[in-house]
Length: 264
Image 1 (cartoon, rainbow, N blue to C red):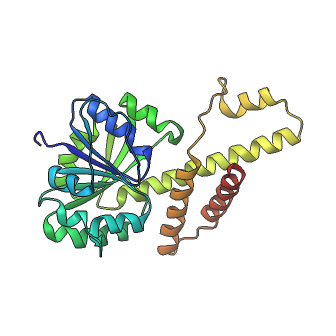
Image 2 (cartoon, one colour):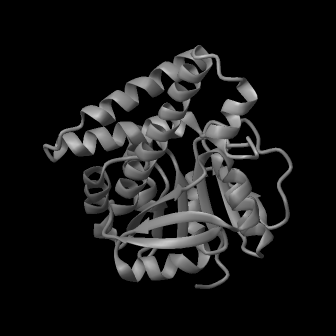
Image 3 (tube, rainbow, N blue to C red):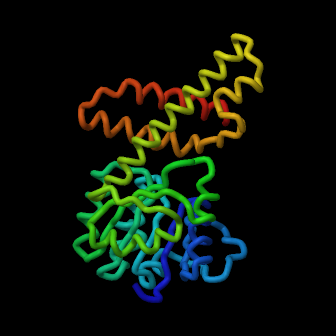
């Protein structure tokens, strides 16, 4: 588009590999980390933003990595204490939401900030959730992107630095597709865990069982359970909203909750 920096807003460290990859490709990056005491030493082409306002004024494309919908809504619309980012971004700017939320929420937010000419797209990383940072660093991640075609076309060249971008359709379609794919990955993980338990109970040797279930290498990547749990929860909510029978999704989510409890 021009030499404006790409803005990145995140509620945790998950966006750091994205910022570093874009910077390594020669793209200027303005990074705002919510609730972060410090960024540490930032690589070349990455500058720390003191507030979201700095990003709103300087950036025409902003990538947001905030899963919590209340936090995301307050960031865009504002609070009694501060103006929302949606009112600070310039007309024609584009916000790419990498969070986990239902399409209706994204569409409602677009209805608010879209009146100022600011577009919202939804995006998601899919595939190997256990090694997302490595995939981004190598530029071979898999991404989904949804929203108005003109805005999508403007953002694809930026996200293409991270890997392959598949356009899924209207706003909300990327989060929906990622939720369904996440549910399938979660179901596979739960089935894998149950098969290990049954095999061990039946006395199958551990090494042999691992080779059978994980392939000859026995190096199946551990999934990001927290991310899968969020996407499975969203898949259940979407199914229930449409009146679709969702007992299996509900069961999978419950099993993931058990795994999370064991890890805590």
